[in-house]
Amino acid sequence: MRGLASKGATLLVTVDCGTTSIEPLAEAKRLGMDVVVIDHHQCGDELPIVDALVNPNRPDDLSGLGHLAAVGLVFVTLVAVNRELRARNFWRDEQPEPDLLSVLHHVALGTVADVASLTGLNRAFVAKGLIAMRRRDHVGHTALMDVARLNGPPEAWHLGFMLGPRINAGGRIGRADLGVRLLLEGDVSEAARIAAELDRLNTERRVIEQTAEAQAEAEALASLGLDDKGSVIVTASEGWHPGVVGLVASRLKEKFGRPAFAIALEPGGIGTGSGRSIPGVDLGKVVRQAVTEGILLKGGGHAMAAGVTLRKERLAEFRAYVESALASAVTDARHANELFIDGAISARAVTPEFVATLNRAGPFGAGNPEPLIALPSHQLIYADVVGEAHLRVRFKSGDGAILDGIAFRSVGRKLGNALLEHRGQPLHVAGSLAVDRWRGAERVQLRVADVAVPNAGPVLIR
Image (cartoon, rainbow, N blue to C red; front, side):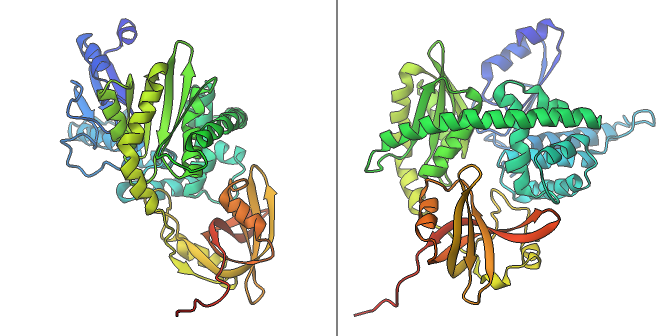
């Protein structure tokens, strides 16, 4: 703050942070800055003394917009500022009013990449943003879609799994300006060059992440033991890149089905890390409590994700604290870990037209999951490893119809093992449907979520 003030800054706007930064923002005000905070993270009763705090998760907010990501809050803030400027007759022929709807593709990308709930206003943001992206009239987004080899019109999951990670890759490796430059670039050739660099950094990021993930999984397995005891996973290591700990935490949460933290221990004995939670367990709340207790130097977040900073010597204390605080909630949440099937169908009825009908209920994502379809007693006629730990599979119905599928990141996990062990056998299969476009052809693909072995026969009641 002092550095910004010394360079003549008089207006400070923070985005996606600031609600709990009491002392830094107090210093900014002391130095004469006007301070505006646009944030969506949870907070306690103490709020920073600023000129404006736009946060739907502050205790006194009644807007009901707590599900918005920071990018969505920026958009609604711009809408409000624009409305006020219009009321003051600010806009002139030489200074026309901006078309805010033209930036909804940015709002859609940020909303999905931040795993915000696709309900209410977020749903509208993403639906309209995807329409804008499909026009391919934004140079940066188009370059990103091309380098990600996105075939066909973008869907919500493309933003989260293909475009968002490439935008973030620069920041995770140390080149945070690349994503901004790409989204601001107007020259097609330069945008293609930046997108190619982000794609390269994303590949580099995956290698770094995989190394840290393997180490973290080994530590988690040792901690849980053969009895699989423990409600929360807390892993930490020197040498981990701080930019990938959030991704590592996500992988641990997915694999072990419980909240997980990954912490990079830096020289000087300070660790910075990220946590990811499961539905029903509020991670942000317990992290804020750990800060209040003095266990963490800093920390905050929301129910499903949190960031922490701590001293290395307090690591064991933090691990014990979150284990104690969350044990009951995790037990309840894991007990309710069930798949809810939306409908059963045979491979013969799975067509692009059927998928198009389902997609009318989209966009799908957090808070509005894709319909989960069951294929009862379909024979697994093919299963083999493809790409990075994925399994390509093929199922056949009783009338001979065949449906291709893929089980992402399943190799070495329970789902992958079950598929490989039951090749040639009938299985009940659950998953979501998507249209796979390859070389101009369209075919439906099942993204496998789970399988079950059919009962050998009727249950005899004695």
